[in-house]
Image (cartoon, rainbow, N blue to C red; front, side):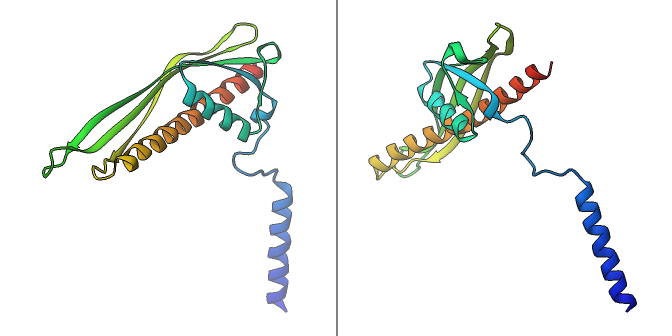
Amino acid sequence: MVRLGAILLTSFLGLAMASCGGWQLRGVGQNTVADIPIHVVEKNARSVGRAFREQWSSLGGGLVAIRDADFTLIIEQEQYVRSLLSVSPKTGKAREINLKLEVKFSMRSNDGTLLIAEQVFGAERDFIFDETSVYGSNENSVVLKEALAKLVAIEVAARASSSAAAYREK
């Protein structure tokens, strides 16, 4: 009987503690991108611009015309740099390649306040070049470029949402 009382007391205390705490899931808060209307300007940054739009929309954010926007994000000068890391000792052809993406971005509020000064953000990945399959190698390169653009877009979206939230809290 004492054991049943201890179990009931522990259960009651656990439920009481759970109901008292204002908990929420990690990553869920009041500052979401859903209430941040943003206009995106792409200048020579088609892949990252497209990936940013997809990322922002998937987060629930609104992409609007410049007259309806509270913030303007400028993404420019997307540049892919490909460099050779290793050569096959048998054939003398490229074996391992590094692909790097760099893009500049900045953000302003609708009243012209600079929220994010122009910054360069980059990401890079290495991949093995299959010298027997030209199609496969080119396809790998295309897929890798898309993956790098998505990675950069995720970082730019995180930076834009946090800057917009900080600006609104002022």
